[in-house]
Length: 125
Image (cartoon, rainbow, N blue to C red; front, side):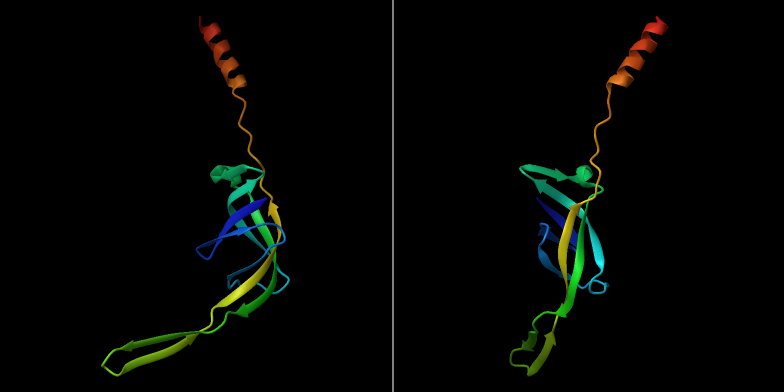
Protein backbone atom coordinates (compact mmCIF):
# COMPACT_ATOMS: atom_id res chain seq x y z
CA UNK A 1 0.00 0.00 0.00
CA UNK A 2 1.23 3.46 -0.80
CA UNK A 3 -0.13 6.98 -0.64
CA UNK A 4 0.64 10.31 -2.25
CA UNK A 5 0.49 13.42 -0.09
CA UNK A 6 1.25 17.08 -0.68
CA UNK A 7 3.59 19.34 1.31
CA UNK A 8 5.25 22.58 0.25
CA UNK A 9 3.65 22.51 -3.24
CA UNK A 10 5.30 19.13 -3.87
CA UNK A 11 3.81 15.66 -3.87
CA UNK A 12 5.51 12.64 -2.30
CA UNK A 13 4.85 8.90 -2.82
CA UNK A 14 5.35 7.00 0.44
CA UNK A 15 4.74 3.64 2.11
CA UNK A 16 4.84 2.78 5.81
CA UNK A 17 8.46 2.78 7.01
CA UNK A 18 9.81 5.17 4.34
CA UNK A 19 12.05 8.09 5.31
CA UNK A 20 11.53 11.25 3.24
CA UNK A 21 13.15 14.69 3.15
CA UNK A 22 10.50 17.42 3.12
CA UNK A 23 10.57 21.20 3.01
CA UNK A 24 11.48 22.55 6.44
CA UNK A 25 8.69 21.98 8.97
CA UNK A 26 8.28 23.90 12.20
CA UNK A 27 8.41 20.77 14.40
CA UNK A 28 10.82 19.39 16.98
CA UNK A 29 12.68 16.09 16.54
CA UNK A 30 10.41 13.29 17.79
CA UNK A 31 7.17 15.19 17.10
CA UNK A 32 4.30 13.58 15.22
CA UNK A 33 3.15 15.23 11.98
CA UNK A 34 0.21 14.48 9.67
CA UNK A 35 -0.47 15.31 6.04
CA UNK A 36 -3.69 15.00 3.99
CA UNK A 37 -3.69 12.25 1.37
CA UNK A 38 -4.15 13.13 -2.33
CA UNK A 39 -4.23 9.54 -3.64
CA UNK A 40 -4.04 6.05 -2.15
CA UNK A 41 -3.41 2.70 -3.85
CA UNK A 42 -3.71 -0.80 -2.44
CA UNK A 43 -3.54 -4.12 -4.31
CA UNK A 44 -4.69 -2.80 -7.67
CA UNK A 45 -7.39 -0.43 -6.38
CA UNK A 46 -6.79 3.31 -6.55
CA UNK A 47 -8.67 5.86 -4.44
CA UNK A 48 -8.75 9.59 -5.18
CA UNK A 49 -10.91 12.63 -4.48
CA UNK A 50 -13.85 12.08 -2.15
CA UNK A 51 -12.74 8.49 -1.44
CA UNK A 52 -9.66 9.76 0.44
CA UNK A 53 -11.27 12.84 1.97
CA UNK A 54 -10.47 11.97 5.60
CA UNK A 55 -7.30 9.94 5.10
CA UNK A 56 -3.96 11.14 6.44
CA UNK A 57 -0.30 10.15 6.37
CA UNK A 58 1.30 10.16 9.83
CA UNK A 59 5.00 10.42 10.48
CA UNK A 60 7.63 11.15 13.08
CA UNK A 61 10.22 13.90 12.66
CA UNK A 62 13.65 12.27 12.82
CA UNK A 63 15.86 15.25 12.05
CA UNK A 64 16.39 18.77 10.76
CA UNK A 65 19.22 19.70 8.44
CA UNK A 66 20.57 21.58 5.47
CA UNK A 67 21.31 20.20 2.02
CA UNK A 68 24.69 20.38 0.30
CA UNK A 69 25.74 23.91 -0.68
CA UNK A 70 25.13 24.99 -4.25
CA UNK A 71 26.88 27.92 -5.91
CA UNK A 72 24.82 30.47 -7.83
CA UNK A 73 27.13 32.41 -10.15
CA UNK A 74 25.77 35.15 -12.38
CA UNK A 75 27.76 37.25 -14.78
CA UNK A 76 27.40 39.38 -17.87
CA UNK A 77 29.95 38.80 -20.57
CA UNK A 78 32.32 41.67 -21.44
CA UNK A 79 30.81 43.91 -18.73
CA UNK A 80 32.88 42.91 -15.68
CA UNK A 81 29.67 42.14 -13.76
CA UNK A 82 29.92 39.10 -11.51
CA UNK A 83 27.86 37.87 -8.57
CA UNK A 84 28.71 34.74 -6.61
CA UNK A 85 26.24 33.46 -4.06
CA UNK A 86 25.84 30.19 -2.14
CA UNK A 87 22.67 28.52 -0.87
CA UNK A 88 21.86 25.62 1.48
CA UNK A 89 18.22 24.49 1.43
CA UNK A 90 16.86 23.53 4.88
CA UNK A 91 14.90 20.26 5.15
CA UNK A 92 13.12 18.03 7.65
CA UNK A 93 13.52 14.24 7.67
CA UNK A 94 10.29 12.37 8.43
CA UNK A 95 9.76 8.63 8.95
CA UNK A 96 6.30 7.50 7.83
CA UNK A 97 4.53 5.53 10.59
CA UNK A 98 0.95 5.09 9.34
CA UNK A 99 -1.31 5.63 6.35
CA UNK A 100 -5.06 5.84 6.78
CA UNK A 101 -7.34 7.21 9.43
CA UNK A 102 -10.21 8.04 7.08
CA UNK A 103 -13.56 6.39 7.24
CA UNK A 104 -14.64 4.88 3.96
CA UNK A 105 -17.93 6.37 2.84
CA UNK A 106 -20.49 3.81 1.77
CA UNK A 107 -23.19 4.85 -0.68
CA UNK A 108 -26.54 5.47 0.95
CA UNK A 109 -29.24 2.89 0.39
CA UNK A 110 -31.69 4.08 -2.24
CA UNK A 111 -34.27 1.34 -1.72
CA UNK A 112 -35.82 3.06 1.30
CA UNK A 113 -36.45 6.33 -0.54
CA UNK A 114 -37.88 4.49 -3.55
CA UNK A 115 -40.34 2.55 -1.42
CA UNK A 116 -41.46 5.74 0.36
CA UNK A 117 -42.09 7.41 -3.01
CA UNK A 118 -44.01 4.38 -4.25
CA UNK A 119 -46.17 4.35 -1.11
CA UNK A 120 -46.86 8.07 -1.47
CA UNK A 121 -47.91 7.60 -5.10
CA UNK A 122 -50.25 4.73 -4.18
CA UNK A 123 -51.81 6.80 -1.40
CA UNK A 124 -52.35 9.72 -3.78
CA UNK A 125 -54.24 7.50 -6.25
